[in-house]
Length: 428
Image (cartoon, rainbow, N blue to C red):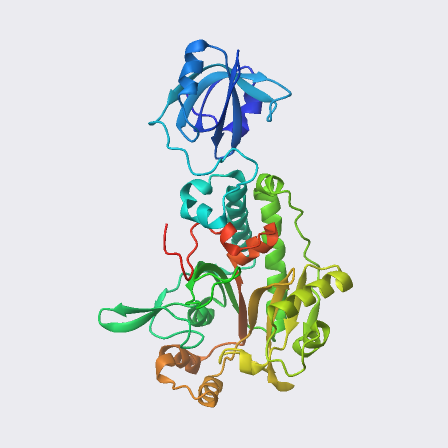
């Protein structure tokens, strides 16, 4: 008999079916026992009246893996409107050792460190699993939106010979006796791929040796990277980012509606045109000094409140960051060379995306490196490609875990990361 998932039981009323999953909860009453079985799609209620079956169920701790064969019977009081009656129950493994927290409770009461120490079982909780389903749907929407716009998915090296952003915050390793680094981003490679496909994207891990421990940073996270050629300036990149976010959220609604409901979320709308302010204006709105070189978290929060109050938007572009705070490959604003054709996108008062227009002329790269006192040699394989003709281009990168954390209202990015890596955690 083919196994049926719990979500499909309402369509099989009157039929004898086989389900399998984990013992989520047992309720042992005087004349009847209720066994709640959990699978990847939800919960199924099993009604046990036979004394022998009841005795077997009594001996099965929560999280034991079982198979149940029974009749699908309508019951309006059951969570799915149906339940299994006249069951047989067969363990598919030994009795489970219960985890150090109750997975059947609506909310996990264990501390976050305890949940992370026991992630393989903590992630079984419907709320933790829901965040990961939302992440998967967001990535599917990212890919689908860009595929429909003739982007090509690429896969770039994660071990590199030179750091992408600077010499700081990189993980070093021994590459057959030579120094190498874990890639901080696919930035150099995705730019080079523009010279081949014009429009590219990548979904992959990036590594930052963050020396601090905050609720918004990880040492390894998933980056959703995009690069496109033949742009006029950064505004073309911002338009693609707007459409990409809309596609991601639409796919979350379509593919992960159950997870959205589990968490009680209302998904934000993406305005047809996301409001944008120049960096200098952002400082004024946030009440920051005019000579501040960057936005602090408090400034981002103030800007998020302003965007909601003034524009009714959860999203806000901040453009024209000072060139001193942008990587050497950033294109300056031709009208104001001290400022860049770069941007950040704030989502509910938190920086979510960094992007902008890149340099595309070989001579400009030589000049930019010289101005920063950096030698060309470590970047030779990257810079040399610009001698052979590259179009004006730009791109952006979305941190997946940060996006999901903000979307679901998590206070710590680790709450939506399956197995986070940070300053203190290398296991499980």
